[in-house]
Every structure is written in structure tokens, then in C-alpha cells.
Length: 506
Image (tube, rainbow, N blue to C red; front, side, top):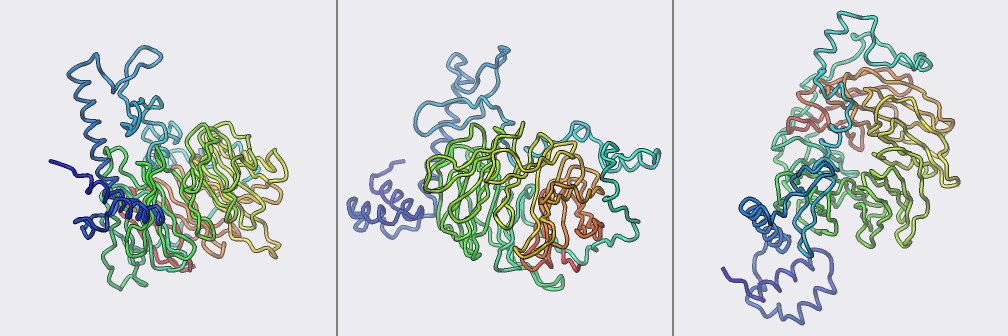
């Protein structure tokens, strides 16, 4: 096999075009005379240059493994722990510079499922499944495994309903989307097209959801990601539509971010990251996209993995990290605008409130905190959860409204709590799940809250009184729930490789 400089130049030219470097690509074309080359009209797949480099790195990785097995004294794939034992290196082979072992180990970061599973309380990891807990409840009804008895001050706000009052969403009101080959971790509705849904496992897909369950389901558009180096980094970890719904951004465990059109065409490929992308978001205007490091400049304040990001406006954003800190940064500033240092463990999520005045954060330290830019200490420390707080969301709120600003937090203690951000009061405790709660989402009007859990159920709660009004029994654990823009459909990512879209009438 031979490679010519003309082939390499053409692949570089295509890479520059795909990455949006229009002027650089034009200059390179003229200096390398690509427009006169026999390859000028060649049919090359998007991302061909990166694909070739990845395959080369895969060969280098195999070469290192071969050396390790046949020449132990030259091993490059193990490193020594402090106790003298050796552990296999999980770090990627570097394109430039010497290979450096990943001393964090396989559990550092991980895909979305692994991160969640590693945070689950020990008793849940030891196999106490839903059926067993139900049987224990039958035997000893005096013990309540769901609501912590130490939190008696919240009992008045817990809505206790007869099971007969809860409406089951029947299978006839739900559509199951099949085609993914692994657990579906993430999904995202288009903000402008209420029937357009994106989802991801090892691939990403765009679905056109029928308006009713009687209509035929069209085949999805499969977004063709480049092959990953190993099976351990094949997951699509995050995705987000721009505000106009014309472009979909996807983050991949291999550290690459991609931007696609509605038709599934790859518009840009961004390869600045050396590790997994856990968070990715467009700003409100749609001219910047934030992936831990935004494409315009790099911010390297955190000492741990960036786990979540959120834009305040078109130029200001917040980031949270496994280092326990929250940073507020500006696009054109090399220094952070604000550093919030109050959590004692990984900060799983950050969210600006709808009015842009408050910032919420939640952590493995079992707390959520509400911050304001006018002070360094948190405004309110929300400490009632008894396990890690993994997800949270703000209820929609109008500037003229006198209603409470409500923050919902989801915890591995199997509860969801609703908080009043005006005074830090715990308004409600939603406690019908029998496993950790992975995801929470308000409907567009803020009247109802959907929750998803590995107990295979999706619950829909009425915010006004905390009543559980609807529930759906799935066939696998629920990783994420998301409402469409009109609030009549709820999507859920399921651990059995499917998505469920429920038609919800509230």
C-alpha cells in the first residue's frame, strides 16, 4: 500500500473545509494545487483524515500490546500502583509525543451509565431490586424504605396518594423506537420541531415521531460517526440542538464533537479534546458551542473532568467538575469571572435559573447549592438529600410572576425534592421511586415534572401539590427523560436499547 502527498493534501483540504476553516482551506488549496489534482472530485467520506489517523493509532496501540506480551521488559501498557501491583493502562495512544498511562484508571469519568452506577448507594449496588423491596414492604409495613424518617419536617409536604388515583400510561399511548444496539443514554427534542427527536448510544439517530400512535413510524436518520479506537469509548455522551433547531451537536466519548444538519449531514468535526466530552451546549444565539473547552478558546481552570456546562447568555457560561468547583467564565476572558468553591465532592450539574439571576449546582456530597454572582458564599445550601444529587432542573418562570422559583433535584436516595429558591425552603418530597432517580424534567408550562429511574418507571408529578398523576412501566432502567416543546410527548432513554415516546394528556 502506498500513499501519495496528493492524497494527503486532499484529505487535509477536506478536513479544513469540514472544520469550518474556509480561508485556511482556500489558501491551502491554492498553495498545494489541489484544484488541479486528479483527486479534486474524489468521493471522500466526511472525517476521512481523522478516520485514517484513528486507524493508524489503533495499529500503534496493537503494536504496543504485542510488545507488552512478547517483550515484558519493554511493556508500555502497564504501570505500577502505590502498593507495587501492576494495572493495565487505559490511556489512549498519543498521536504526538510519548505515550502516557492513564493513572486515573478505567473508572475515572466513564460513560454516562458507568458514572451513574458508580455513584449509586452501596445497598442498591448489591442487588436490592424492586421486587425484593416490594416483598419486604409486605412483610414489614412499619418500615418505610423510601422516605428517611429523620426528615419528618417534610412529611406535611409529601403527597400520599392511593395507587388507584394514579393513571397508568397504557402501551397504546406510547411508541417504542428500536434500532439502537446498546443502552440509550441521551435524547434531545428539537426546540422548533416538536416531532423531531435525536438519541444516542454508540451511534446517534434523528427520528421523525408520528403525531399519533396510529401513524406509521419512519426510519430514522443514522448519523455516521467515525469508528472509535476501542469498544470502551464508543458512546455518544451528550447532544444538544441549537436554538433554531437547524443543527444538532453531539459529544462522543472519544473526545470528538460533531455538528450535524437535520438531514444527518456532518457539518463540522471538532477534535480538540483529549478525553471524553461529558457536556456540550449551544449558546442562545447559536454562534458558540461549549464542550468543556469552547471552540474559540480553551479554559483550563478545573483540575478534574468537566462534568457539566450551562450558558447564562451568549458569552457567559458556568462549568462544574469532578474537582468540586464551579467556574463562571466569559468567552473573551482568559480568567474566570467567578469561582464558587463550596462543594466537597464532584459537582454533577450546573443550571442557571430562567431569569439568569441564580445558579444552582448539585454534587456527590449530597447537597445542592444556589449561588448568586453578588457573593462568594452560596445563597442557600440545600442539605436534605441523604445520597448523591445527580440531576436537577429549574421550572419555567416569567419575570412578572409572583410564584416561587422552583428548583427540582434528583438524588440517589430515591427521592426528588422541590425547592423554593426565594428562601431555600423544601416545598415537596416526591418519593414513589424504588431506585435512584437519574433524570428530572419540567414540562414547558412548569405544571408537571417527569422523573426517570432504573426501577424501570417514568413518573409524572403535579407540581402544585406534589401528586403522582401518571406513571409508565418500562422494560428497562430509565436513563433520561425529556419533554417536547409542546408538552404533549415525553421521551425516555431505556437501558434495553430502545426509546419510549409517550403521548401525554395532562
